[in-house]
Amino acid sequence: MPKALTEAQIEAYHRNGAIWPIPMLSAAEAAECLRRFDELEASLDGEVQGRYRIKAHLPFPWLTDLIHHPALLDAMEDLMGPNIVIWGSSFFTKPAHDPRFVSWHQDSTYYGLEPPESVTAWLAFSPSTGDAGCLKIIPGSHKGEAILPHLETDDPNNILSRGQTIENVDESVAVEMPLEPGQFSIHHNKTIHGSLPNKSDTPRIGFAIHFATPEIRQTQFEGATASLVRGEDTHGHWLPDSVAKHDMDPDCLEELDFCWQRYRNAMKSQAAKAD
Ligand SMILES: O=C(O)CCC(=O)C(=O)O
Image 1 (tube, helix red, strand yellow):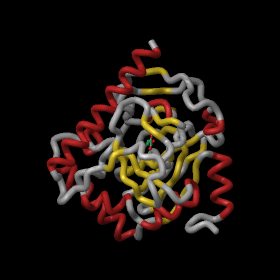
Image 2: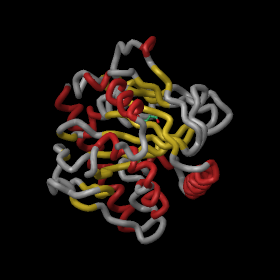
Image 3: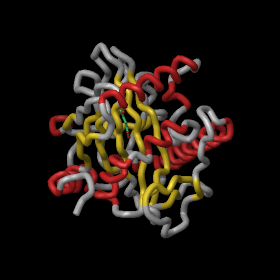
């Protein structure tokens, strides 16, 4: 018996490679997340999403609590089974009237996981509507190849760090995944997805949480870390993530920078191999 999802949602996830919306936070809780996000961004020189990618939760107890939220983990357990690790989390943000977009891509291309069965939950801190450039998917695309050819582009408006783009996607079948603040969507790492510019008057702030099961391992480098959030680590492929003692814990910040750099290096060497 599923813990959070309906049988119809589980079937839709397996058919389409994504489901939405799933409730997680109340409107007040989502507003508090947005307030903390704004506070963090105001304290930085650049955008939160510049540095807080791949292990964004590490230096923040409040984000670490968020990735352990029972409503999130119950839904993930319905799809992934009882043993679950979270190996990463990333902010994807677009201020109001932001012309930037995320090109069509598969996460499996650059995560380096084997088997390529990672799953992302994308939690909205603010309204993520069609107008605001919500996530869009190509339903069923997760059933194809794990790594489709991706062109590296240098469009400054592409939020992806290397502008990875799948060409000739049939956009006529794309489906938007709108969310209210506090709701999340789930997509498989082979599902082709992307998003358009934010044409709305409000920022579109998303926090993406990256899940795996213990048998999945990182192939691009040694010593990958993750947090065991449900059940048992049956394979020992992941070293434990550090746990922040307070916001901006310097040890965790160092680990975040190290991990993000390691993923970026892996992406670079993958691109070099493809050339
Ligand atoms: O937030 C976006 O527009 C893109 C997010 C994304 O690519 C992801 O969560 O994998």
